[in-house]
Image (tube, rainbow, N blue to C red; front, side, top):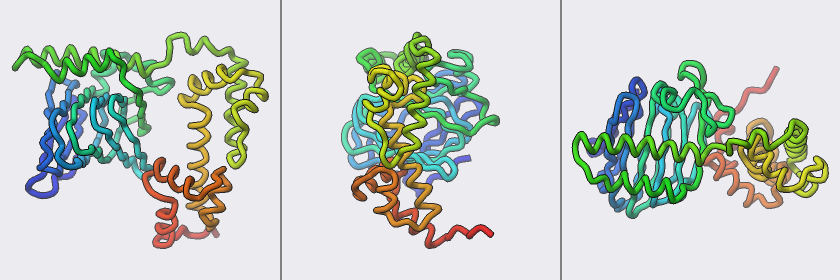
Length: 328
């Protein structure tokens, strides 16, 4: 159960998707953008944000058994910080982007900059999602959406919204109906928006057939080569020559198999390796930066903070307070 709001001025709003509950707490009563939560049907809820944020808004949330959610914002850059056990993820969402997520047993904070805000979120319980969209969906790539009791893995996928999805959002935020007719209208638009965004997030229906088995093997070999040479990785041209694939096919292959570009995968692997070195060794920060391919400690620190939400020095301070016992 989510913790109670802090202080008498805090506001609590709750999304109920069958047995799936998300508690949203707003701690800034000065912000004139209180979310409107609408229960459309069992297992389906919508959250609307429309108004003016006089100051920066922090919306803490706690999720027990997570819904499948789609969050879209037309204005205002948003920053999402997720704490899933010991793992922390920080995600920036620019205006005009949609975020598909499934985040069981997650705590976090959404931060919204001051100014006018217009956004829509749609939340499905897992049974409702399965009934409408099936047990798996191309937007999840090869990720199955299991029962909450089976797995604790999470899902985050973000994309820029198209003119079509923006138009549906405008229809939702300017709904001309009231009472029961409004709920029916918003339910239809919620399903339309979710369907459009799933299609935009998912791979092209022929993507799997676009790569032969040999090409898939070459892409995986290129990925392994990147991971083996984090401090001095081959460039895209070198990878193309090594695999015998052209640059376009190489880029296409990385996105289809791993869901990201070669550069994004390399950056993430470097920073995860750096985190291991920070935790398990006493190597200084400049040497760790060089070991994972950063020529500048400042650039390394900036990239690390964007990925994990804290600086490398934070890990060292934590180790000083709670040293890791040496193995015997």
